[in-house]
Length: 151
Image (cartoon, rainbow, N blue to C red; front, side):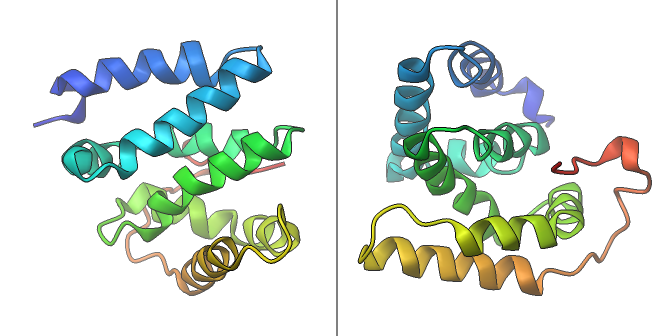
């Protein structure tokens, strides 16, 4: 069954475009925080797995890393780490992470919000380790038009 057949697909499509893509800082900040809370709630585990299996969703989160507001970057990180931690990443997500590895590792290496936040630092270290060791097993991202490349 295609992810587009799930009722949550349309909900997240609207959520991503209307809330995460909003020009309002407050709307984006609350939307990305709520998204993280929804996906991390154990009762939503099936929805979370589908959400983090979508390349389009990951693109949105990667673009939120570019936001000038550190709070949005931090909340985006908490959702992005779910894509990286997914043990059953689709090949296209692996391809994008590998193609953007140096930029992601550079960004994450410099990414710091609150000094002394041990949980954040542990999560960040795990994300860095996972991205650094990813390998492409399937060349699903054959040409640049199919892949996201961070600028």
